[in-house]
Length: 278
Image (cartoon, rainbow, N blue to C red; front, side, top):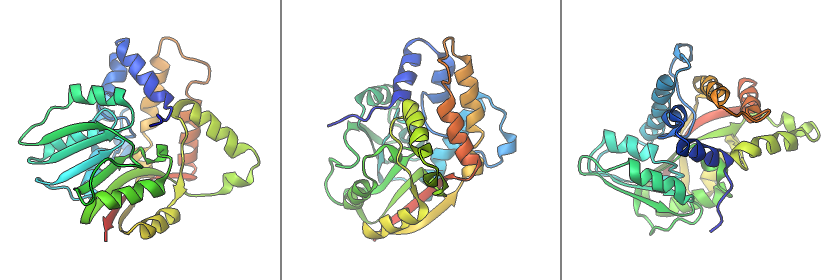
């Protein structure tokens, strides 16, 4: 099983080990963008960002219509933030978090303990080759991670396989809104390389490609919610954290600057997407 190189997780784990309490407070539970219903209310603090990151997980889970007693698989579970969120909201859930990086799972196992008759298990595995029987889950979630998977097609096919009829796949992702960059020779390759230096390989696709993918793999589209504007305050928090580091490499925040420019220019959008297995 190959492990995708994700430099930002290497950096986070290093900062945690070195006792960076601000970085751990910001990303020790969720490692994804925040959601602010009113972006103007964002104050740039870590406490505010934590609430926004929790709100984003809630959006994905609510779109899936999760209820007590269900069996839920969270793919790309990171440090277990979405599993923890569900564990604290519902009872009698059978929760499984799956991630390809055992280091992240070790932290999740230490931090997330089952509550109110819930069951929790964290398993190392590949989201494109799920190690579970057919029709064994009610819900599959993937919060801001599918762009790392080597194949969305393989993931959707596997999610359809392990979901029961009528089960839901709910995710958040960056979605391409324009192909303008493809007409500027070399620019897309350069920006991809800069972003990969921090986030690893990022694969994005359009909303139209998502709709076609869902149809091919046996899903009905239920939710397509553009929340780009409500996620933008995330960049202020990241900027503050990067600037607070004792040793900041030159241009350390350039990848985030490029992503912010792409989002504010409406070239890359942030969506909640939910599908029902037919």
